[in-house]
Amino acid sequence: MMIKKQLLIIAALCSMHTAADAWSQRISKRAPAPAFAAVVTHVTDGDTIWVSKGNGEPAFDIRIQGIDAPERCQAYGLAAAGALLQHLQHQSVRVTRRARDKYGRMVASVYLGGEDVGAWLVANGYAWSYHNRRSLGSYGRQELSARQARRGLWASRSPIEPQLFRKKNKCHHA
Image (cartoon, rainbow, N blue to C red; front, side, top):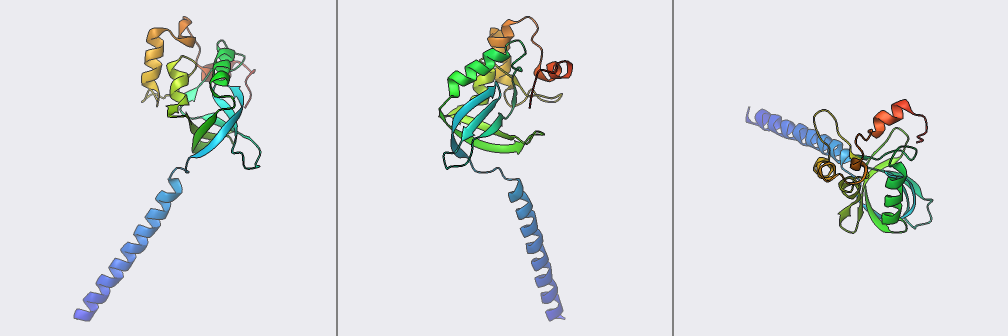
């Protein structure tokens, strides 16, 4: 009888270990990719850059996570793109991949030195914090500050959020 109990305990422990391993593997698949260094080679618009890792691979585009900048053809769109160009062109940045968007672009947090580029764009009124009904988004505090100070696009009486602009206009591109 004692041996049966021991075997049952061992079997239970083995199944718990297997379940824990499976859970651990699922978690690790969702873990963010490690950050990598790259050089900004091009700025497409106020929230999309191209970077090169400098290892012979071609440059690729990155959508900056947590923000939505005006389209180039939208009011303040060229200013946002120009500010990002002046801030990042040919600069070494640290990139942390978060996801892929519906266009296949990498969505990532981008850092210049210790500065979060998404936070910089929103704080200076070049972009909106990407938000939903429940949250002001990652950069909600920076957006509120920029609105109150009427910085950048917030100097306009009624700036149009890019997602609303895109629904009504065809000038944007992926």
